[in-house]
Image (cartoon, rainbow, N blue to C red):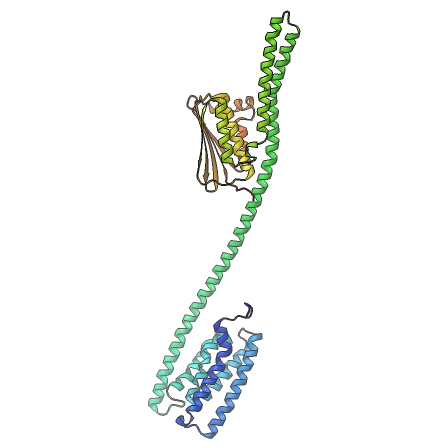
Length: 416
């Protein structure tokens, strides 16, 4: 049986329960016919009514498959069945087994305004059966019928009230579930839009990063290589016009020194052009290597620490943080003259923090723009890198008390 064929137990009982209860009523009534004093004519009448009831129930079963909701036709069928059950119960109280169907099918067959009258009529039939059969004989029997009928009507009212409350709760629950589904749909759409925005942001960051690298490289070439080559040319011009060999050798040595320095600057610029440290490793390993090599090169005591649960970050996030670390270390070596530098990478839930601290000379934050213009990429460049991936960069420093650079960016995981 497939899910489409499955029906809840209540619907199954509404379809087949009346047939079973009619059969029970027929069997018990046949067995008690002599006890209750049914004559031949009453037996024939009961048999004919049972046949009509069976045909009526078959008609209802067919109607229910095509029109499962209450209608005028289903209401007529309900009250016709009640009339048959009432007469059968009058003939033999044990036909009340069939009459009890009215309690269970009223809500499915009757419009809302007719449910209570239908239940009360069924209660009348059941009360007649419970006092031993209709009609009551004598005042005491009528009083008993009134008491039993009142009890049945009271129970009907009570259970109807419970059913209405349950229906109200079911409707409220259905509305709550529907609202939750709408909320979940809206949340999923927001998550999808957020993922798309993240992807777009990273693409824009990559494009802007290319432009920034070009500007940075141009600034470095102007500030280092171009100046070095200019110096070499000047020294060689002096050599060409030198009055003696000693003077020429002195300026040749200066030109050679400038050439070696310019070569070193060229190699550094090429090394910084692309984050090769990330080619085969993650960000923590690349930062550890960068900090160690920087410490070996500068002779400054440098340490690296990772806190939190390490995540595999998106390539653009890793490259941005590595570039910020490289630039901060470069600034420290150029300007701060520190004795110790500490770099910390912290994974904090949905955020990553990179902190670079040194105990160097520090500086006056008000002088940052001038330093930036003369120092290449600088602090403004690091801040721009962080902001391009929805992050931020803060600098805490003062003359004589070191510098702390802190970059905080969203934790965007590596694309699988």
